Image (cartoon, one colour):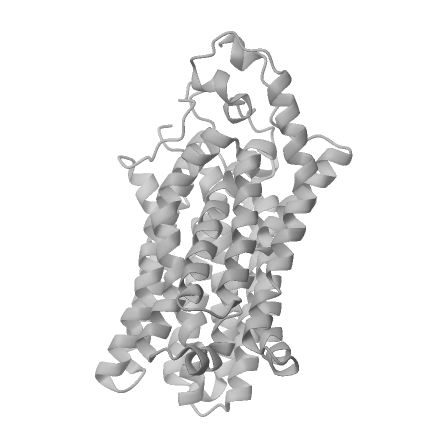
Length: 438
């Protein structure tokens, strides 16, 4: 072990004010992951009318954050190595706030620029939060992932449910209703700032004996993750060789990494397709616009139940294959129910929400459970989210094109059912208790 590594501050979080501050910070990071995206769908008709967007341009606007996710995710680990994990997360929150505000300001092209900034910032947060949890809570990956994803699901549901009433209550309409979510990012920056500054002080005070090595240059990013203690996630994450590179690398040659990545992509495809098209499907099935809005809220809210269920189950299972298949099955039931028994649209929305809420927690947890340290977790997270959001960006567009070509939702829903089946296959493979390179 190098001297630089030996003098690195411990990576686990203990008790006390700093631990509590970091936990609140992680919850605020989670709160910012979806609210700025899920708030758009319910006010899209107003946006189309005021901005003058065609239906195709509106679908591109919805998909633009996902394209940014795919494009930016591979670079997030390098940013963390250059700036430090804490500074990178704080900077991403600041960019997110700017993007939300820019999107809401009247002006040519600003809605596109703001949406792109928003997507890039969330991409960095998406990749690095699992790495942070792997580093600071290596024995509690499942519960911590569930906690922050629960907050993500809750704020996503609130954003989609509150945006229309807020837009109707103020003169600026949808611009104010979308812009207020920048305040959540600003609060996150304010809460994390003492943690960021405190970490910077520790980094500056840490002696190094090898200034040319990456671990000496960034001691926080080089801290080794301690071995999991017996119990909790130790049972779910098998031991692996201790010698690992200090830099995050994309595990492109690992079959396990591809299995995790495809699971991530397929479950994201179902979620974002439902977010985009569920109201339209339910209206086509006979629901009113108001009912479809409430069904959409129920879809998001039931995601919270799936999130909590996964968070409860993950640390209690050595293999997560069965859990993943159960979640994929709920998604399949929801999709086929919309096709075969449309009169029960609310029930099928709840099934689909349970699937997507639980699946995202499992996907994020696998980034830590299938890796040996947080560098490797960052690499897997980057790879899986880059590939995953390519699929997620294509999903709503392809489903919309097929619907336009056929004139009904039958074939699109059958295609989405096939995605749910494929999700079950790949999570069955990814859920087996192994680690990359182990």
